[in-house]
Image (tube, rainbow, N blue to C red; front, side):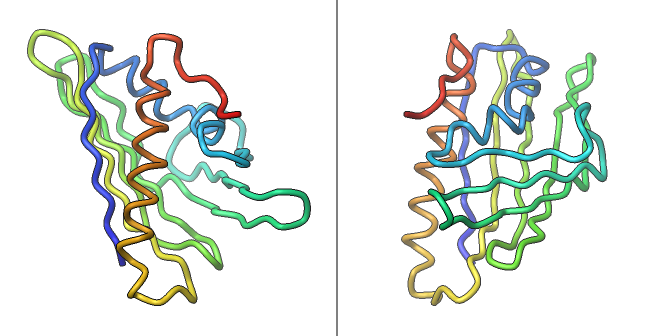
Length: 153
């Protein structure tokens, strides 16, 4: 299974970086043809579930996830970590977003994701990993941009 790793530095404080990257609806809006359904309504905590639904018209697939670790960055400079377990029939695996405060300000994002698509041969793992790095890397950059991320047309 391909493991996707993205590292991104931002001048935003760790707390703002956390808020932007764990806004599941805004995050889903960065992926073309995707919307996010959250249950229960925010605030997020361990046990929160949400589904990223991607598709056009009747051709869709769901990527349901559950928050299993929820540890926002602390005032004293300790990193924040959220871990999601993917619970779908088609998409399984996990994702972690770690936000490390940097000395002198700003933060460093470490996005790790084990993405499995059932029925897809292992020979396509490099293609899945490359697509994931592109989509998730673009989402991180847009969410942390000064305007906070615009919807992908």
